[in-house]
Image (tube, rainbow, N blue to C red; front, side, top):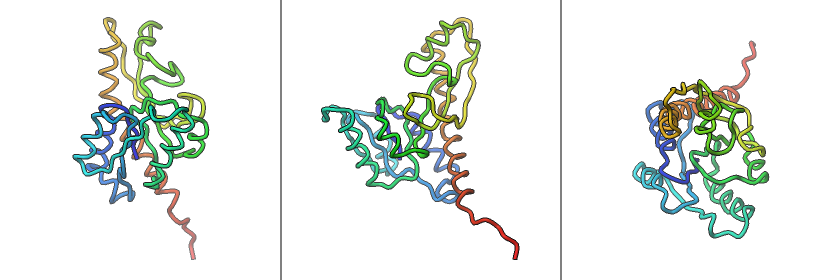
Length: 200
């Protein structure tokens, strides 16, 4: 299950990797659905073309964040996913929602956490004089961008970098890192489900 708000380039990278790396055969895993909080999200078109179920739960239709998260959880639970992946989903989730999917809710953040949580990460890295920046895949907790780290990729900050140029190079790494981290999570779950060997 993948949640998006826009074009869904990370979602597309995950879908392609799932097919190329045979997640269904290796782990019994597939992308069951893509849900967006925006009906105009371009990623929905890609998902539909791939034969993936899609849905829209608009945050604008709800008076509070809690009501939106409740409706979103109902839409997610209809597919009973083992893993919920945030891929450019631009909503801050309530603690109750995060607790509901604890241990199986992943996010990607365009910095080397714990550095630069929140927004405007690329410009902040440049302004701070960082020599490297990067991207982090982490489990989601109630504290924004502070969950356990699954994987990271490092990108050099060039002397003449703009935030847009740095963001573009980091995005290339995102498309490689997120599928890799998810594949690692699935492999770990598969190993944990294997029966313990006991010699007779």
